[in-house]
Structures are given as structure tokens and as C-alpha cells.
Length: 297
Image 1 (cartoon, rainbow, N blue to C red):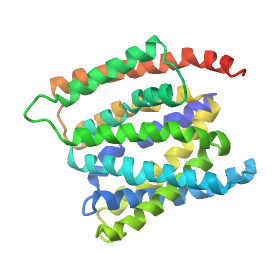
Image 2: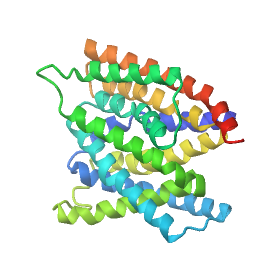
Image 3: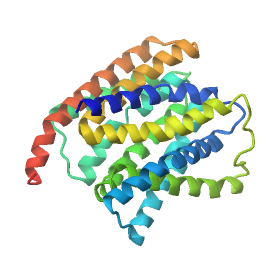
Image 4: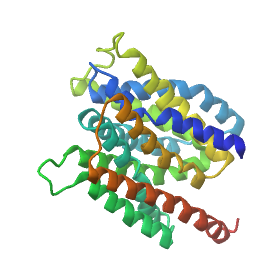
């Protein structure tokens, strides 16, 4: 259990400044950056995944592989592309808070697709986080940031992918399933780049290579190994603390490194999202024993 918390803490520390470091990568198109970071991350994950597949003696059938290809397309060319485009066109603090609200959409999709009925704490958490998003975005203001909608779409599609992914992780384990999905999604995005006139590797320079390697090896590779290992040693619900601490840490980095300034609406909205995250984690912890009982575990 203690090791589990250490792994999750490592994930938070690595993943916290993700949006800030993304904005430090210059000279590379957002979609190309998304392709490169997952290409590097997938290759970094591959040795760990192969070891896990051998340990579990996993057999992947053709229908399983096709399902993971579909998940990969939903995850990388759709959800993560919208996220990366938004990050490069809006503030890092807005990006990290909006995307880290994805657990509310996961709870909604889980209720719809998996019949996981939310308790009152989860329902209140969803309401608080939605109000938080409204305060952060200030949709009725003339200065409304259109990329807020990109971030919401990224969070919603990521939540949908996350719920659909549970079937696969249940069969093959978190690490193996995630790595295969990442590789499939990266290949599909790579095939799309020439069609869109976007280069694969052009633009990489001395100035952007270090943040690019950070995003790939650490932000899209090692952090997920640490995250899934932490969940295995604790629980999925405890693992959600990553989405609680990440926006706080990310915003601190945005203020210190990018000199971003917080508006009153942003502070109120962020506070509501943080409070909602606390209630979401608490509500899921309460619901977990009941779900295990219902499934005879």
C-alpha cells in the first residue's frame, strides 16, 4: 500500500507540469507534437508491457485487437489531439483544470454504460464541478475562450474512452492494454499526418528536444507505468487522487514559469472543481464496497 502511494505521488509530480512543458515546445505543430510524444511514450512503455504480457500469459484475439484499435483512435487522434491543440492556444492553467474534470464525465458514462449508479456524494460532486467549469469559462463574457470547448470535448471523449477501456484492462491488465491502445492510436494518427500535410519529425531542434523527450518518455510513458502500478497496489478510487492534485500542481507551475494570472472567476471555479474532486473520491470509496458485494466479491 505504501509503495502504491509512492507510485501515485511520482505520477503526480511527473504529470503535474505537463501543460506547462507542452507550451515550452516551439516550432512543432500541435498535432505533430501529439504524434511524437505518444510515439516516444509508446516505445518507452513497450518493454514494460511485453514483460507484463509474458507474466500474465495474455492471448490477444483478432476481435480484441480491433477493439483496441478503435480505442486507440478515440484516445489519441481524437481526444488527445483536441487537448494538445487547446493547450497550445490557451492558458496552461485553464487546460489542466478543465481536462482534470474528466472524472465527472467518467461517472456519467459509467452510470449509462456500466450501470454504476452514483450516490449522493458523486451527484453533488458532478454538480460542483459543472458549476466550477462555468465559473472558469465565463461563457457569457465577450472574452470567452473558444478553446474551452476543445478542452471539454477532450475531457468528454477521454472519459468515454476510459469507460470503454475497462473491458480491455479487465482482460489484459492496465499496462499491456494501455500500451497496445497507445501504439494503435499513434500509428493511426501517423497515417493521417501526411494526408493533412503535417510532417512526422520536421521541426525538432536543440531548443525543443528536451521538453519533447520529457513529454514523451516521462509524461506519456513512465508516468503511466507509475500510475497503473500505484492503482494495482491501492485501488482505482485512490488512483483518482492524481486528477485531484494534478491541476493544483499544474497551475502553480503555470504561475511560476509562464507568469499566468488567475481571475476571480477562475479561482472560484477552480475551488469548486477541487471540492468536487474531493467529494468524487469520497463518494467512490463509499460505493466501492457495495459494488463488490453486488458482484459477489
